Length: 268
Image (cartoon, rainbow, N blue to C red; front, side, top):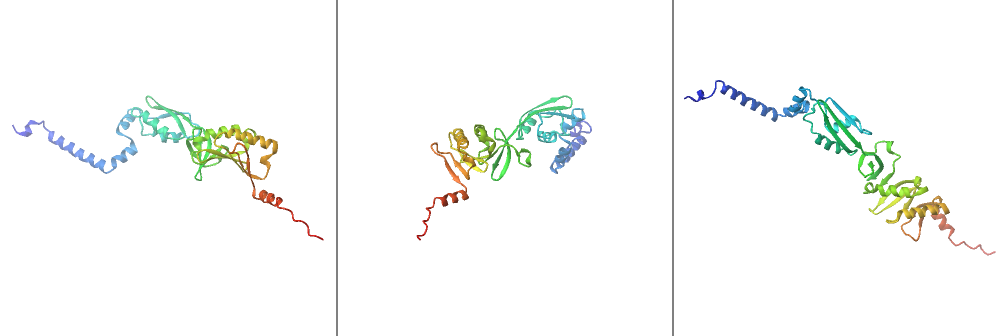
């Protein structure tokens, strides 16, 4: 029996057409036109779902405080090419959590064409300066934004390596400062061990342990002797049994001059 008689009529034409289609598809993919098609229209399954009426036509977002809706959608990867059936909610949630400002998020599908996003944003707690750059940080030290304008200018300022992760310690010190708290302008985390506070232009060097007690001692000295109103640029409280004060250059020069022995008048 001839070979051609073993197959239905038209089999060869169909096979040839399939081969041509395969070659065309291979060329379509290899040329990069397939990637451009996906970029412009979405995945084939999403296209079919949209045609069937399951495209994402509404996204309801709750919990927005400082972000714009377009920023959330961009972070989530949801746009006009998306479809509800083939949207991976776990992947969308993971994408959202990569945004530093978003602390938590949940994503739900509502058929036929809605997606609901619920997010919780981190609250700005302080400014962190390091290597000349200032960033906005949350209470846990996470950087959530750069300092681009004066919207956050009233936030506490911490300076130095790892100062952001020790923000809680700094804020506790401010709370312990009593009447001096409103005069503290910044805190520098020194050598990963202790804080130096900038208070009305005066450096307050605190000990590694017992910093709150040292601040209470400073508040008492200021209240009783007006220490911080004197011409000083630094107060060192790192030793429990003494307070070391550094004068301004003018005050130091005046003090040195006053301690010089006075010359006796010439004999007449």
